[in-house]
Image 1 (cartoon, rainbow, N blue to C red):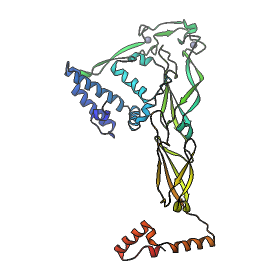
Image 2 (image 1 turned 135 degrees about the vertical axis):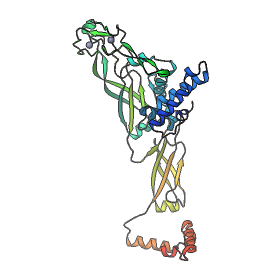
Image 3 (image 1 turned 180 degrees about the horizontal axis):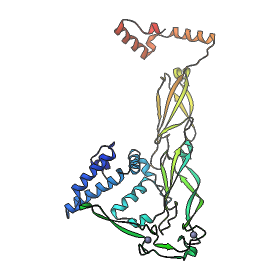
Image 4 (image 1 turned 45 degrees about the vertical axis):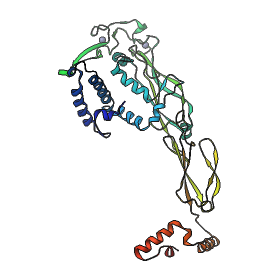
Length: 376
Ligand SMILES: [Zn+2]
Ligand SMILES: [Zn+2]
């Protein structure tokens, strides 16, 4: 599907006002009432609505932007465990209201509230994957009244305002935008029931707050602000619908050695002057173990080596590791050490320094003054 920003013809950093006005213009242009029987227009109209539904809601827009920037996270769909999903699922829910697939509008309204938790992961747990028991509080159905909120589950009558349907219809808008919308009955909050005597176990609420524990299998690659969704592990519905979802948003803590960007790892490796000059075999850390690595002779400060496939491994992606060396200059030298350095430097010819030599020549052509002799 085309990018939502392209569909609405706005820039990626468009303001909410720009999105709104672009949407209004396109909706008028493609409205099916103005093009009866034109399938292309109908498809375009649907597309425009989908794009607007996401971009006009700052939270959905952020999720969408994130998904666009991190296409791999779309794969955060943990096939083995049917209850888990990633961005794909959440967008699936949004789209179902337009396509008619899945839940109807009123079923959506009957759903319980989602419960969102933030969970901290150590850098290594996030990078390698882990199993985590998460304890949280959610609304669970009151068994004593079977979620009706009425004593014994029987002490209620039918709501007269909505005749027990729990829904009322509203007309809104005008012209081609006139529409009928269905809302929860304000008299009974959508239950269709009028409580005569309250259940004493839940004080008429129909639910009780309880602590529960869920075990999450968190695959390798979770990053800060990525999340997992466990369907129907949120708050119970008091309207006979499905429970809401549990949404676990991750916060990944920093590590002393590793940094990461998506699935690539970065480390800064200090090396001694001798290693930089003569080269050496060293051991460097990866996620799973240390590996042997050869620093070649004549390695310059700031040089980055790429170790393919030594980053974070997910089911679909294998990241790389970037090793950037910094040459550490020794401090607090003894008199003898100073003498050795000076003797060594005396023995070096400018021809042995590539950058120094070039700088020397460039400065001479600019001011007639050499650089290297003064540097010495
Ligand atoms: Zn109860
Ligand atoms: Zn009612």
